[in-house]
Amino acid sequence: MHKSDWWQATFPKGRQTLTITDASGHPVKIAYGEKGIGKPLVLVHGIGSWSYGWRHNIEALAQHFRVICFDTKGNGFSDKPPQPEIPGHQVVELARIIQALCNEPAIVVAESLGALITLATAQAYPELFAQLVVINVPIFPERLPSRGMRLLSDLPLDLIRLVDNLRLASLFAPLVRQILAIERSEVVVDAAAITEEDVYWITYPYIEFPNALTKYVEDLQNAAQEIQKIEQNLPNIISNIQDNLSAIAIPTLILWSAQDRWFPVKDGEKLQAHLPNSKLQILPNCGHDAAATCPDAVNSAIVSFLRDAV
Image (tube, rainbow, N blue to C red):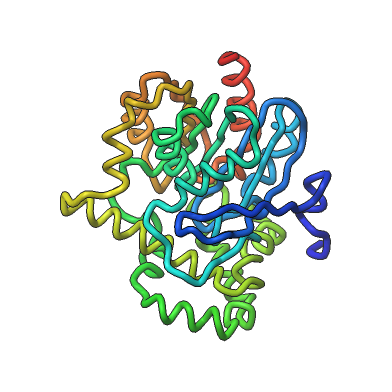
């Protein structure tokens, strides 16, 4: 079951590589795959995830669009540079990936932290976007959503780096997978639906690739610092995105899971009130990881919204 290459099995050309200049000015390799023809539709995953998070959406959306799925820097099969990241680096990098892979304004479908980054990118580079679909966005966060995330964000980064350098995640692979399975139960409605194969692939980068765990914890710590700045009324990236929502004129579909335990539906309603050209659709019986756990509802909502937007 685990021996087949997910990229090869999913995309006609398997895993491809694009080199961009990151926000710090360094060249980095970005892993991506594409399927289908037509208008470009770019999928942007959330924190601690990679392209595999869209496994149940790619085929359905590729019937209508040229679907492009990529791993953000520091995640999945993309480069994980050792140097610390500039806060907000993902915005510049998302723009550069869209510019490199799309020869016209793209439809962008983004989930969780990927959706927050996408909103910021749409504010800074509106010319790159045709339509937007954002799913369960942490736009009004009060804290890091899970206990595991909060625990990791409090650990010294040097300790995580040591675990990475000694390849301890690989040594304790069964334990890492078990912890992940427990964490996954928070973002799905039915924990029994989490398969062994899902756990294998979701954890694969952290077990197999050096520096993957360090980059994940660095992302968590940066997010925690931004949320603390909101509480202390200090300048921060999230408040800046909130303050400029009304500037996004791109047609936007906001999808929100009724059973999202991390971010309540009222956040989606508040976001919709701030986005002038948006509509909100609630997904019943669906957890935070909507793309993977209620894909049929997500796929049909996306396709019908884009058909109406044309």
